[in-house]
Length: 245
Image 1 (tube, rainbow, N blue to C red):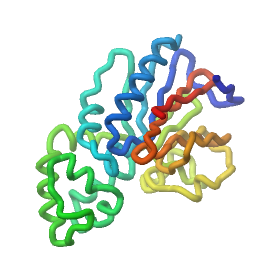
Image 2 (image 1 turned 30 degrees about the vertical axis):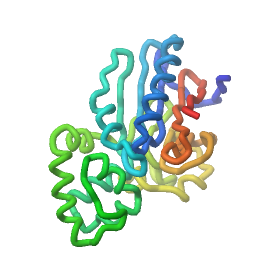
Image 3 (image 1 turned 180 degrees about the vertical axis):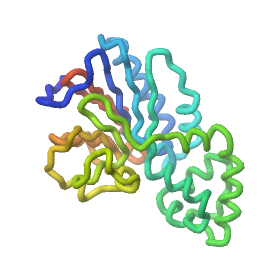
Image 4 (image 1 turned 90 degrees about the horizontal axis):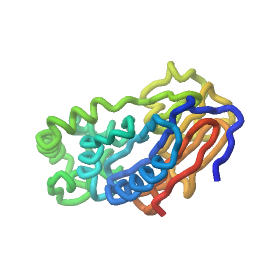
């Protein structure tokens, strides 16, 4: 059932579909979008906004397929926004600085490399292999993939909501946020009871079900491990959620 929010509103005529961290689960993405399409077909709002909150790759086995789906998205009924997550940021930093490879590998890069056809001896390759891996990956990504990854914004405001990957620094206004906080912040943001200038809709931190607070809505339900990919549906001053499991 829809839940009425006291203050936060989406502009009249607009329905937002915000999707949490996909992490290479292209199979779940396809299933969830079918449910989004079915929901949107019954929504009276003429403008449908589809907003992905980042982390399209790593951990799951189908990172390339997920990126292909997003890059090729062309639906007449939806306006698409793909925000940058910390995992996209790690990949780009690896290409620029291969010595950062081990940190990325520990966060699920092994599966991403495999999805692009790059064979790695183990999830913890020797440091001297990172330069070669970065060169190979750059060849695989050049063109549409790099264009997409470099074009992902860090946030989007719609009505009384601000959408970003990880959250915000509670001590700073939204327009003064550092990219590192929008991509990585956890405890300081998650533990804050401050009412921000916007309700923050974010992923990055896993919870079994959507975490709804007066100042934020967290929708990373750990899809790569749980099979539950979540979408928050926001319209007027109401909301509901769609799931794959």
